[in-house]
Length: 495
Image (cartoon, rainbow, N blue to C red; front, side, top):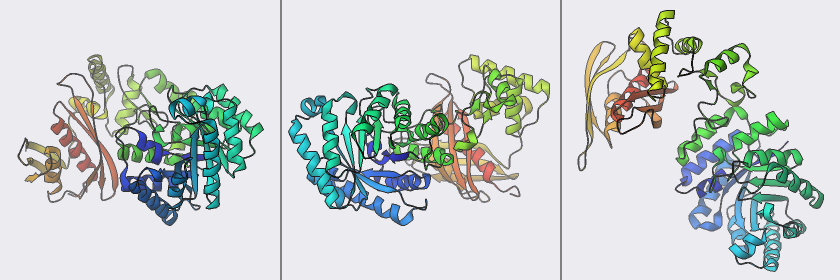
């Protein structure tokens, strides 16, 4: 069983512009607890009094609200300095991650510290933490570019009471074979459990982490979505699934929860994940090319080493420039449309035509193509006209004329912007269930200043969440179409 040490709350905030805030950190910590990570690194208490208070709150909430049966270890980050260790002690954490440069390059040239001073700092900081009954993880930073100094510092940390030794590569300077060799050497020299941290500067963090685990590492440092300074560190989702599928090594992480945790961190951090990001990207289990659709339809393992259900995902087919009739039929069926063979041919031809123009075929684009061919489906809620007024120094307002169950209504509202005003105008219509926007993501599906925009939203209604999308060359119009679709998914059929 490989232990998972999560550094999202510390290294995630080292991404330029990212600040989780107290509520954000508490929400992420709750997700990590439910997910089943072994250690949550809650923050760097010595960095400020505010950070110290936040770490203290994370500790309190994790212990009080733990939903994973046995609450995870909550850790604080600290330099090998007495004041840092004291700050960690004051937060009530279970453990402290004490780090110091282990290469002469970092130690002498970057930090201006002598070797003997480093040795003494390690000895003093680890001893102080142990005197306060904290579990101590000692991190030797830049282990991959070190020499005998690395093992000297690790020996001192171990002799001073360190419970785990973490070998850290903060510059992505190692290959999987290097990771294997350094862990094997550590196992010869160190009696305590071995932990590893790999930066992703050259995209090697996951491969190095797996190689280290296969070589005998006991614990791996990760972060959700790989968040961290520069190119980040090993992504939690990739490491956990890679360990299971490629190395046959288990963790305590509930893999089916990985997408929801990834989405929460994406929302709170404001750092979007790639749509093809391994495991958690929304397109990872979506097939468009005809050869893939045909193969997957016949044998699921033909192009998948991970079943989507194992990681909380759903397999989908999609349509585009390389699609065939089978994909179109599958997508139409999924969206609830019935079409003749000739209609399928017309839809496919139009899809390929748009693709050749450089337009990305999104769900909203495809629906508009389908309705061109098959006609528009009846909807309980349909916006007939809308107007939004906004500008500098005026309050944004919106008015819509709509049909709801055949009844015409007119509604107006104001908001912080035109989209907010339209949303409030729709929400105030009698017969529209209460709803809130949970996610709001805008992308361009073509290029230029007149690009087609697609707005993807997630709406929370009375019976849960629904997703919807709208496209237009006007961002406000795309937003309205997405909200209109969402309302039709949550509105009671008797309205």
